[in-house]
Image (cartoon, helix red, strand yellow):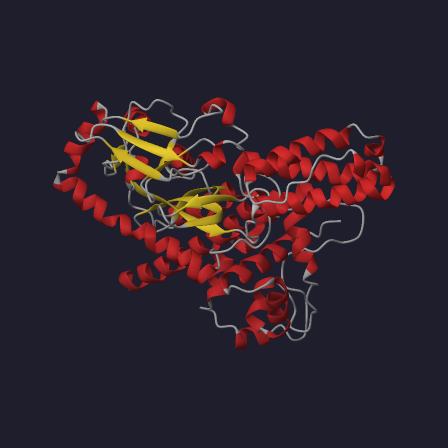
Length: 483
């Protein structure tokens, strides 16, 4: 049953808060700006029973726990422990000074069972932007875009080793039920060549599936697990406990395994929109989504500022239709007239990425510099799940070529030479500072849990906390100026 009382409990010790928690304390300001977080109650009340069952913890209080956890970069256990003796925490949570705190496991259940729905990221960012607009803090009509990467909680494993380990478990399960099955089992491969290992696994799966023992759970469970890992290897090469994480590239020589958060901020450094994707997604594909979400959240957008990743033909044309000026430099390596639009350009690495998320390993340029050819690792292509669409068996190399720019990008190059462009482009540093702030001050450099949904939830709470603190600083500066 959901409680309706959200104020501080009655206690003879409540007056202590007036002594130990100053009226200008950050948490008092945050609670006032968010109107005691009643919007959280309205958003989540449909996920509770209002008149039956055991009394649930107030969702407003649990959300405040998550905010405190992000603000001070604490674990679930530590934020609850701090709440036991920190009077400012207890005031913010709506607890009486002598009240007990929750069990840390409650926060885990709250995240999974109550906050697990879609749209929370947009709603929290939208709420913070509305608070900024209502307080007259947003004057600009420009947004700045970029992405930041977050490492997965789990590390990627070597595909060959994973397949060999699970196939060993499958064979052991089969032999445990039928000792004679070993005589007809396919010859085991024990090398390090992934192509040969995949071929062996496919033969093994086909053979075991036809055996009578395949109907037993001890065998069928291992068989299904092996099939799943084989699909993972073919799909994105990497294998990990975090099934949604993917390998992305910051430069040609460095990569990360995890997720990307695509962020738009305004000139006041308030986050106006964000999307969370797996690590291999390119930045440019998220540009129009970020524009639309920023407008929905209350921003008036006339200009978009970003790096070369956003200066594609499609983005330029769509932005022109929306009467939005794009302040983005045309990268010399980004060409149009591609032979396959599924290949995307990674501006950080200066290389193209195939539809499966694998980056090119070499680049060749013609003498006239009009055509560039990118070569991919064939060892990955032969086991890739998408090989039938862009690769033929027997090929010694897999390459992809691009040619010169389109007219709309040539117009953009002329715009690059103007003083207006240079003046606006110089403000792009603000998004880099915001990404650094999220990672260094809010623990956004590594995922707290597994999966894209958990990463999106982490991003939602983190960016809401970041926005609210920025809004409070701006209001303090505004009060000083007016005084």
